[in-house]
Length: 72
Image (tube, rainbow, N blue to C red; front, side, top):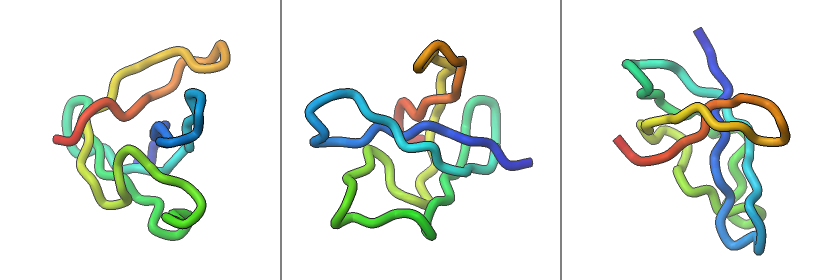
């Protein structure tokens, strides 16, 4: 099953997140996809496509979403 994980964008001057597809591989552990949308000349992602990450449920724009918190 595919999920949407929100990845923090760095060097934006404010908190900005990019929704990225991911595959669940464990409890709160996901592997990011996003190779097709990642452009390092346009955005700096906190975690790169292919990374295995830990997520946490957070509220962004009054909506509960899964946010990438740390590399696993």
